[in-house]
Amino acid sequence: MDRQHDAAPPACRAGVLCFHSGTAEHPIYVDRVAGVGAPRTPAMMVHGGGHTGACYLATPDGRPGWAPLFAQAGRTVFVPDWPGHGRSPAGPDFARLGTRDVCAALLVLLQEIGPAVLVVHSASGPMAWWIAEQRPDLVAGIVALAPGPPANLLPDLPDDAEAIARLRNDASVGCPILAPEDSPVRFDAAFAAAYWANAPRFPKSALAAYVRGIVPESARILNERFNIGGRGLRIGDPATLARTPILVVTGGQDQRHPRATDEATARYLGAEFVWLPDRGIEGNGHMTMIEDNSGQIAALALDWLAAKGL
Image (cartoon, rainbow, N blue to C red):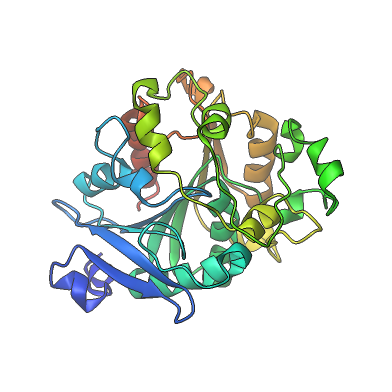
């Protein structure tokens, strides 16, 4: 493990808690949380659409996030903001930022810190599958929270606003949204409350604080996530990922991730699948890393990593 920590950027080795990485076109801001005690494989925690890395640093009601919890378990944690999100600079054409653009920026960071465990959520799921196929030597394992599947498993949805509107509440295709790519997509409080903060375990007293942290999203990334026009991010051969330890975790109250969908993703990738109600963990929705039992789910993930020798 010492070699992995020595591979961190020089600024991080000097104790600086933040730095920039990514590509020249799409730089990314990164928070670094130093591991405590005996070192374990480092982790890179990647947020989903409409969010920033802050969702791993602390919960909206003030509890420690997954990054400090993993650090307490001996893992140095790197938490990037996607390009144009949070403290990462936005390019002039942010609305057309693509999933592969984000992947390229994340891959630069992974080359600086890896091998590492990827912790991903929602729209960063397809990024993890693609990155792990491109550089399996740098991905020690993946913990995926309600991850989007590779586009290989998604139907090619029509690039037609009326047709997509009719599918808005169809969980079997992810409740898709078609976003015109001439401007970023902005999520209001009603959307957040309906899709991201709707589960019993979400800390409702902190809803206003949570909504203040939601950021505009690239329209192209959303369209690719739902595979509109067949433009989603695909992998070439799932057998490549079958050699990487992968855990897929899904809450029982996640509207966009019914059990059958995420279980099919896990099966396709050769991953282990945990449907939280099967473990007696009820009431979780889409934002498991900030819901009121987030520490319990982090412990589940940490136990799994330890069992894998990671």
